[in-house]
Image (cartoon, rainbow, N blue to C red; front, side, top):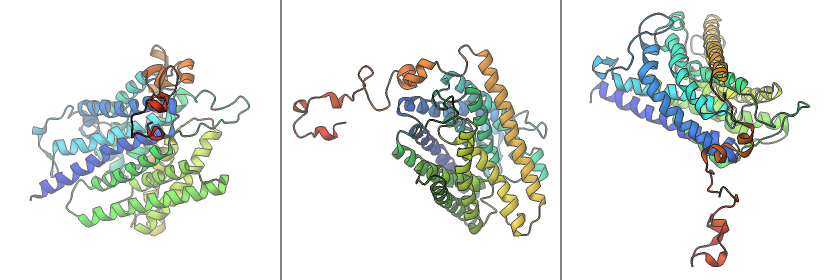
Length: 430
């Protein structure tokens, strides 16, 4: 089997795993949201994949990997597979792998604005972000742009994907505003807990699995199985310690074993190791995961004090921990990290790159969000009555769990016991 064939099979398998991560995002975001908005959250997650796939193929790939300047690509729009290979990979293999990354960056935003943002404006934002925000930063780092020329390192996207997604999510959360009743006039916050922890937990496991393709596939080659194995190992270690660190830290802060914090801690560890998974050793990866887990808890508490409402913790997990993960290369990366004898030079480059990428995403994201708020009829937020009723019933006309719209009772629960078929227990009919 040729090297091109081996590389293509591995990269496509990794891309399939990254695509499957969207199932994880859908489960996490719907589980962490309230029951009355679960269907709308799922609608956004599916829509992001569809829209970003089309827009990245038509425009985003050219902006990200086209030639033109060190700031933005200006050609290779709607790429043709006949143009040849990218390294050992057929063009469409490389394109599909990059496409699923673009969709991941944009789906981060949906969780931060869940339960109150309008579907139409979110879809418009997704299209614009896939064309104008994500691929521009991607060009800086992976498309031969100015950050790559500086020696900036971001192997699988702690900044390009996660911090950029976090910056766009922060802009959206500020523009849309908090959910009704989340913050009281006296400044206190009202808990709005997750409605389905089994779904959220399953979603985290799906994301955890997908991350092995996210990080491991970023080799874009199967030539060195040892390197792929090392990347997968440090990815798993960082997630594991992130979960444990967040759980222990929140226990110390609140006295409670908060599963939502633990789950986000695992994701924080994954985000934290993404940039340096190719240059950070297993021992240091556990340090990265532990710090990311603590940052996750403190970041969620900080945003709550700032009255920035993020139902799923996306801004902290992806934004704050994405920035930290990028800086971690300058702290713990083999041969370049401060704590392994590399000095401060790489840390300076990492700081410039991650703050530039995050600031760009937040700034352009803010322009887009507030611009949509000003020009789109109806704005970017649903009506108060729809928000109070729940977006599933008010805007989708359905309930996530099969409840009747009029009475709110489950259809199976409304059947009298004597009407149940012989041999069917009414206790499990729902």
